[in-house]
Length: 144
Image 1 (cartoon, rainbow, N blue to C red):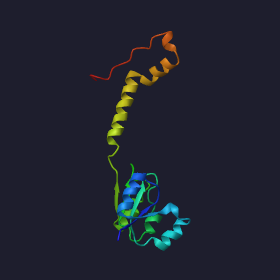
Image 2: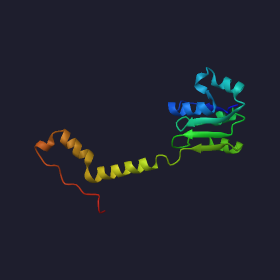
Image 3: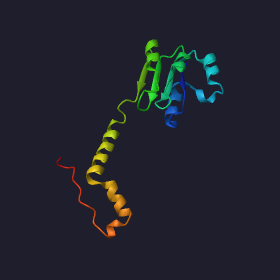
Image 4: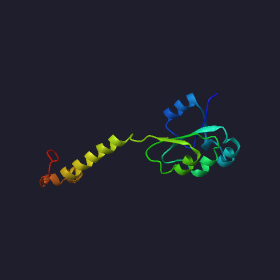
């Protein structure tokens, strides 16, 4: 018998397919009255698969008396009621650090844009100013 896992919002199709192979998935949005459904069927659901934008409210957590784990896809747990989970000993996991390198890459992009004025120079060229005047010299990043 597979563990019952609640999804309270859509995840990526590949992830949903992987979860469906291993678990008995309950798609909350498929039920006309989610509150009534959880009152009837919430017992026996041991896991919650959610996303950072959707999270897990204290009310949702309370409606799942057998809940043991909340898995949150995405960055941030602001929408997960961590106090409610902690009070019941429910484990909470997330995808922490998954975007750290991407954020660093974007920071480098911003540094280069500010120092070399890439966005401003692009606007200068697109506006046709290059035909009449030269773009000012900018500063380099290397060596600093």
